[in-house]
Length: 370
Image (tube, rainbow, N blue to C red; front, side, top):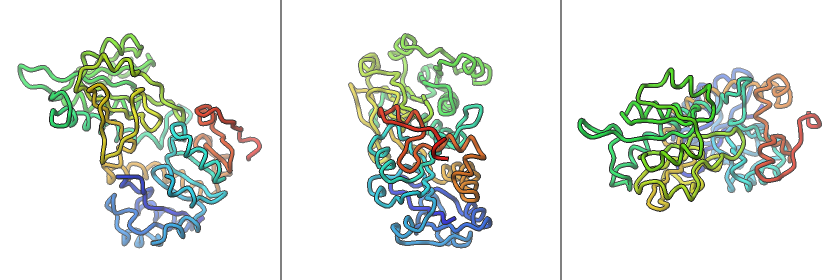
């Protein structure tokens, strides 16, 4: 199979879909890997390293897309790339369709096969291709939140860990999954009094046993959230419904309960955001204010640490990419129920129910397609 690795062109996105070590594996199995010139530089990988690994370097991005049976990316295609997608071509990347109707319609119109990293799902409902980026985003959420709490950045002027004689900050994490746990670990490690909210009681019991003593668990309800809002300095939104739009846990009306200078970090922004006042931002222009409450809603947070992120991502995507390349996508998903859950749109038909539900569109099962 011919596998194309284009350079990411979303603003401030420095990750690349595969590292040179992954190229070695694909080439050893008889596949051709074409990497766009300088695609890996943002993550610290030179064209020479890809050539040594067995890849071909292509300067012209249109040629790369046209010659590829499968395109591997990090982020969803943007408008500039829609016209390059071929009918029947496999796109293997993060899509987050439920937050973007324009993208969904463009992929439908292209008649490609869209396999989304974020909905590949194991039997235990874990999301193996989302986990490493969730780990990065969770840890970054606290790091960025601490920075923007500084007065010069627009925050309340609060030090996360306080000092002797001065209390530490209060951090609220909404969601006890991978993002929330990693955010809470860093917040607690910085000395902040941290609360994790979730609706899953077995999960809260587990976290209560294993997390540091300055982390409190609390059942997530509107009443409990409202009670905490006037007391917290940093709120991290870490709620995920795989493939579906995130629920709004903090409404526009509830913002009035939050103190000026408090920082909200919405890690769920890729799926529409879990704060009603959230809108996507970029690393170049990451924040805005609503009623003097600072919102950080960067949609590709791990892109700010591309070396770590690229290695973490390609560690988990390579086995699935290799299966698709070796067997073709149809046989690969027949053999692997995890990968089947990753298929969202096939040649003009939505096959992932939550994507269709987000926009009131029709969808189909795999029976007719396979």
